[in-house]
Length: 332
Image (cartoon, rainbow, N blue to C red):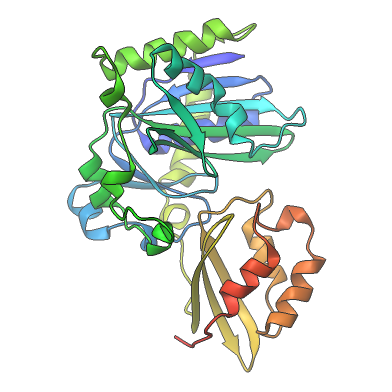
């Protein structure tokens, strides 16, 4: 396994590095990295619905979309990101518990009782300090996650819009009350750089055939080109939302959904599906399936039945989706 302790803090470059390693390397890879203050958008999310645009622009915070599903997260230099890239040996790429186990073992060595909970979270005393996401590409799996170490929680709260769907069925309504920094649970003070170096050494020393690896100039040039062509571009980070006359927002066991539709004479002419869900395929193919059909529960049900599992959303029951989509129909 190649182990990379990436020492750049540019979010566009770091996210391009992940994609480059996934698509160009055949080795298993572990990487630690940090971003300067930035908002990282999930692959299928509506950027404008996720960020506090005034705060982001005023504070010159980068907004960058990643290639994995899941929700929006705030990064700063008090946050540590980890990435695992592995060959697909039969473990589901959304078996987040499998990939987070080295992180949990390291925190246990620091006498921190960290646990895996929910769909994709790591928690301490019931408070979240890590969100995780993954993607499968050409027989390889990329899994990455955040580790709030000494992040500015107030900045996190101010930069993001938090959907009320996230709080359905929860007694606690404040983002600040639901998250925590790892540093707050250490018995002895540890600076973030030392935390990173210790975690890096722990993974290297506990994995067979692990070796430290440094990207060369050819890698750098390829990554820089990908960053410029994609991760700096408005079309990737924001994209255009279509004009629509039907909007639905609902929650499922597999994630939150925002569905925008154009319905003309009872037929769906355009549909855009946003959310923090996960899927093995490309979301635009799912959207294509759901156009040029009647805007009825029956038509959608038949269409969904014809889809392969690859083009549907992970852990989302069809009936649960249909109930949310067709409950209290209204035109915008």
